[in-house]
Image (cartoon, rainbow, N blue to C red; front, side, top):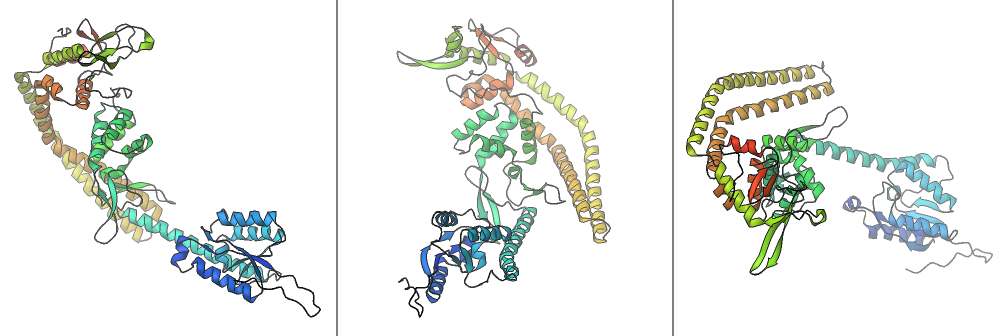
Length: 508
């Protein structure tokens, strides 16, 4: 477009032509409403041609108008400060293109005015020399700000309503992907990582590995998660079928039952929280020891001289690599022995503590006898739980009736409802545990008996991870290997005695 020639008056002198920067601004939401940059620029160019205004430059902005921290606007401000007097106007189509924040907009108008630049909206023109124009400016600027606030409030309420219906909003956590249900509403759907996430919770509840070692193993299984994210994952109730609803005004934070498929039970989730909060026994396996097939005892052995944990490594020799357990070179203890000797001695130790079938049958009979005695108490507790659940339902109905009669404030009703629902969840979990007790006991006796009777075979056939679990579950203390035999450093002898074996060290 050609730049128009200056206007000449009747005396022949030139009238100074005003110069302007054009500022078309859009955001993602604005483009959906029809505020395209091309449309704005076209309207501004036609206005300048009609009013004989020189267009110095055009600055296209694709940024929100909530603040003036925008790249192109900062560029405009910098140019105006460095080249005062070259621009008289900053032209926009409407005032909401300039800002959607009344206080910030009014401040920026003052800043530009001191720099000799007037802001003007061509579709909502105002003569700022007239005091009453400030009223119209306030209306033009406040209306979009109110619209923004209302949109944000509606979004907030909509999201809270969706969460209370059990829908998870946002990027799907590990183990799920963002899907849609039949009504085209958000729904979490388990993905290929779901099995690994479940495995992480199960292993954490067993406490055989600390969280850092477990994180490494999860990554080896293909779970792409950072260390801090792994910690957050184990804290997230979404995996047991719960959706967290944050506190808002007088409504406290709480969890609701989600509509998505849980990956773990609520009982398992609570067990993991107990582990993470230190309410259960200490972790047994040091996170600094990686799992190696040839060094399953690494992390459980200590030096007989300095008492520090032994490490292990492989050395190349004739015919292949030979593995050794040894003390750290920096300690200069010279403790070193072949890994095959220690591994074979440990297998023989397990053979010595294996439980025979007669003892297992006697133990199972004792457990079942005690279980039968406890069933009387369990039935009484189940009956009491059912009565309590019914009472909670009645209390909720009563509270709702009082609320509808206007005699109970909504905030107080929400607190009562939240407390009663939490109590109901605890009772339901306890009831389920009591009902599952006989089945779980039978499964534990069968599986545990098979392991105890064939512990050495199980160990030989186990993976590296499983070997560490077996070691950590039987020997919570550290072991010393000296002169081709094991000696306990802590409670190992008590463990061996309990399992029916001789307390003496087992020798090759």
